[in-house]
Length: 256
Ligand code: 13P
Image (tube, rainbow, N blue to C red; front, side):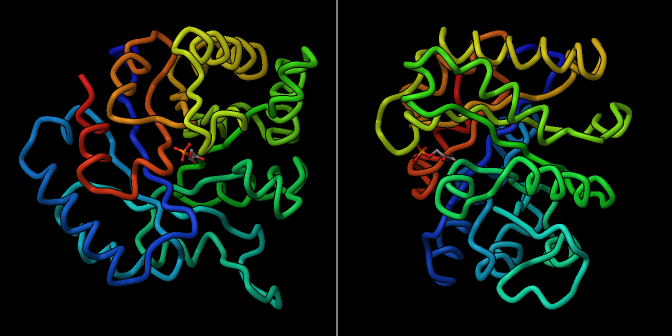
């Protein structure tokens, strides 16, 4: 963490929680964080399933905790059964949206080209894109980590002018650390974040790269959040499993 960059701690609830469960967790989170110092020095975001966005929005109102979508479609509207547009997320009160999460890439065949279309759609709205990148275990072991991440970044940012990327947030989520209990060591994560920042400096500008928040995701827990966030290039966390419980997520938000 660098004091010029305000950390973002984001909860990705994935395909968990009914509306009553989501509402209850959001209410607990608001109570746990309300009035504490963390909400002044950190941005806190909750990304529930689409079905719970309205209930979570209501439960979090007045708390300063922001809402995010987990995915979207690049068109404004149309015959795209099962999809949700940027406008619809804004309508539900979202400020952020995740793009290209590894589960979308892996299970729903989302390509860099699709991620790029989504990014361009998001940049034409006030939503803040959280672009997820990360290598698999086989790619890391094959010595291809850097090439894979650079290709994901280049693919997603293709055709986007650097001047439009000042809102971009990046999340580095090594696939081998998601839901496995295996966290990248703070040193490994920091090294990859540094590499991403250098790539952005070359692609955009030194100023943009110095300001961009790069979050780490993959088995972040209350016990390891502090040591991860202490690293220069780690500007927050994208939390899956440990964000489902309000108490555990609040302890991550309040990392020391
Ligand atoms: P876990 O925290 O469950 O490993 O999930 C990470 C993740 O995919 C967040 O988007």
